[in-house]
Image 1 (tube, rainbow, N blue to C red):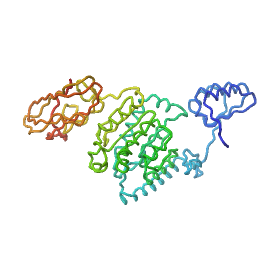
Image 2 (cartoon, one colour; image 1 turned 90 degrees about the vertical axis):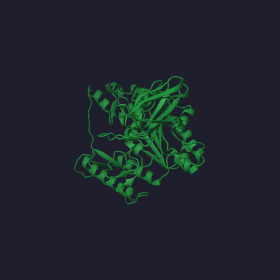
Image 3 (cartoon, rainbow, N blue to C red; image 1 turned 45 degrees about the vertical axis):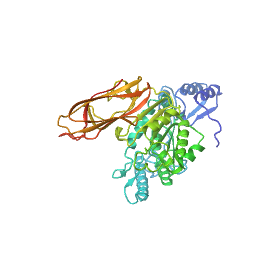
Image 4 (cartoon, rainbow, N blue to C red; image 1 turned 45 degrees about the horizontal axis):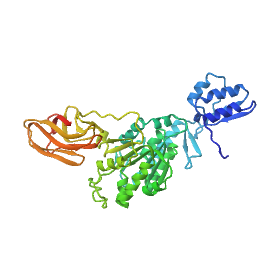
Length: 466
């Protein structure tokens, strides 16, 4: 049967109001209608319209409990034939289900996952080893060595941003209108799977046939309708006609640049930024990393934090850009979150007291007892025009010499040797109000105190822009 007409709750209420007595109206998958339709069901029923409701939502059932109705519970037996089923696993087309009780489902899923992990174990680039690039979402991979073990922290960053987007929260609360998500360079599907599990209509694209095959297999086992595509990122994006509410790309576009040229990567970002409705999440491999230093040979400049920030800002497509620095909650690299519309609440960082600026990231390498480690890294935003920065610190009297360096957005403005005791520097800068900057304070010599595993440089007494 071809479904050629779709109605929303308002339309359905209008149909109910016009229905003649002795007619029958059937609502299959009724949970997709708003709970307000219950009053219309009841009113039509009182006029003599037969109403058949399939799979009502919890909210609908709660309202129906106040009315008289016949409740029929239809159950499907488990494939084992012993008990009623509680779960389904679909074939490849996601149309024909096999029904299982909880015990049979868990046994079948465990068998399916073990078979998949055997395939992963035999695959390149680590054949024969329990070693792969990233985990599968919500699947136990105890004993496996993972190249990217920061996936849970990265998806937390996405979900935290989603929690501050009113449009996405409205869609997530809706019974039908799911928000959409795609991961560009999805690998074996961790983020697409995770976002699907959190209510998103998810998709993923990757150039690797193995990754797409593995991700699709997991989605099928879980009964998820995730659209995975094996294709080069730029080719896929240029053909893509739809937009997505949330787009993420983790350490992917630098490989496009390495294989297809610098301009190809810029084209990818242009497509990603323009095809994002609400939130864009970017992680980029920097050219200072050994693996990429000799890869993007036609780059006109080094690719680093400022490069990514400038690229996102110069697009003029984002209201707000937030930076999660490498090391925060164990993430490997900086992660940039661009909001197309102003978030419902700002992300507040207040772990470092710096006059004249406000934090745009947490302070890595700074401890809450005032000590600075080998490197202090923090993203800042000027709250006024700035002409100088003052740094005051203290090192133990018996500390050896150390060179303290102060770098602002990639430019080293101070390199000074200090010994034990107090030290203070004031350095000129030229920073305009609302300008973003990346501040890094480095120590050439650190020490580890007794009964303290930290590597420490000095106690920060004051850091102030004016």
